[in-house]
Image (tube, rainbow, N blue to C red; front, side, top):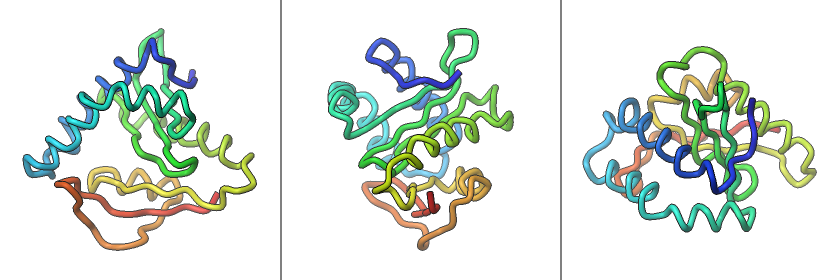
Length: 153
């Protein structure tokens, strides 16, 4: 089941994101990038909570037996800022299901023409399977390595 995250589950969701990031994404990062991402999750809890409340960000979780096993988040309406799935559940279509839930919501917004993401090198193939294409070469900001990608709604 996919549903929007409330304050009650926000910490659990961010813990899952941090765990998956540490195991699969951080291996491509220098310490600066690891620190940037970890600080975002740890020190920005209150900010993320306020952003969810204001609508600047939206976050959904994939629940299985009451446990969060996947997280997807958007900011600025149509930019995917996070998408992570617990390693025990990789390659089971969970990322695709979460993306389709977000996509359905965005399709109902007439102002949204495209969805963007700054993909980690690890996740490029996942996003390509979801219909995204690269908009440019690999970049780095504050140690975070990413490839900008885009997909029409």
